[in-house]
Image 1: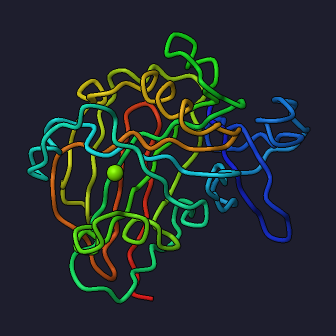
Image 2: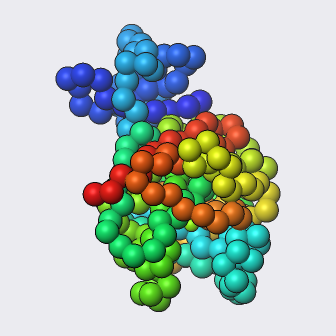
Length: 255
Ligand code: MG
């Protein structure tokens, strides 16, 4: 089932189940109030899709989680998962602009599988990790690459407003273990990988991260980017497609 968050003219954000070319409107936020539907359908063409979730507390990211990307970055494998945070204020939705700050160096796209946490998770063992997953979506871990190296840590370079596009919806029934991930800039292929090549699995990362922080419903975990370098500039559109989910599109704009 695909769950979208959307607005239409004159309405506050609502939730709907994607059904063909329509959204079947839900009575409330399905993460907290289930999947009760209203007797209302909205054509997808009439809806503006929003970020399918705004994390209550945090966006957890995994760095260097694909061998090929480690080779791109000339970085040896860490002994344990490398996790970091992006602020929830970096999250924007499908079609929203990525506002490029006036910084030196490249702005890089990182197309990633994103896990949406559905229940409070603290010190969860990997064997039970999927019980805490609401579903999966797509995210772009946008990074000001030269600032990452200059700062020596990534809070600024990956934390700017709009640096976490997310969507277009949450897929609640997905086998996440072998999914193709493609990233394009203005239609040109830039990055390609498959989730089977992740160093640490979704289950292992939920176990590892929930041992550090309590994960709250709506928190996101971005599972890392596959190989491929390159960035984007003002006016260019980044499309990220993950098999079984869909395509997330956002355009860079100088702010
Ligand atoms: Mg990343």
